[in-house]
Amino acid sequence: GENVEQHPSTLSVQEGDSAVIKCTYSDSASNYFPWYKQELGKGPQLIIDIRSNVGEKKDQRIAVTLNKTAKHFSLHITETQPEDSAVYFCAASTDSSASKIIFGSGTRLSIRP
Amino acid sequence: GAGVSQTPSNKVTEKGKYVELRCDPISGHTALYWYRQSLGQGPEFLIYFQGTGAADDSGLPNDRFFAVRPEGSVSTLKIQRTERGDSAVYLCASSLGVAGGQGTQYFGPGTRLLVL
Image (tube, rainbow over all chains, first blue to last red; front, side, top):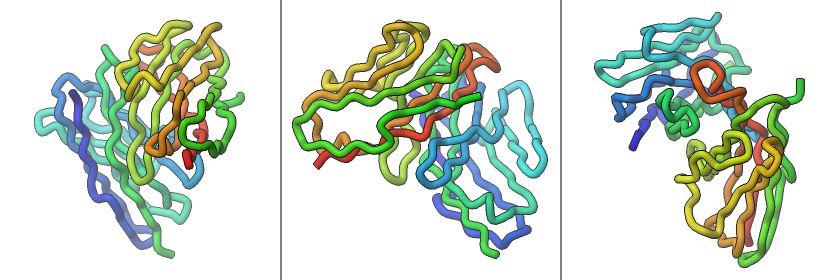
């Protein structure tokens, strides 16, 4: 089955700097890659997603890149702000089983003022 | 509109007891999912409903876990003979459908279960 690995597990960046979180997946059939942000005591919130027919997607300060050949995908947050502090999860699934999303183990992002 | 809601928000029980966790999906969403999240880990898939039927229950850890969705809306996750290892946050999510853009899953706040 699918396995998603995520790193780093913790990341601390200065406010205003960029943060990058990287993930790899194992199942070449995976073609949908969502990213979730989870704040303390809350459920995960979808922040951006990408499908395998595109290599990059951007939404304001957030961008995601996908390298299908290498089975890598990454989240980039620019101009970080204190409210970006949270745990971020990458995930993967296939359209045929969009029911089952396989999550990475999470990255705790801290923004230093 | 209202998001996914889960009740109770916290549940403390004793080993061996039976618990029920409830999920109210977003109105109009046909698919509903249950995940379990242990401390410091990502959510792990348990079961998924399309309408009233369980389309995939491959993530349920054993036969002590069972879930229903009798009218295709609200779902209940039931855990029998709870064990300390069942302590976790149980997350529910719903999606409009399952194909393409309709499969985006929206999560509730979770139920924090503690088995003493």
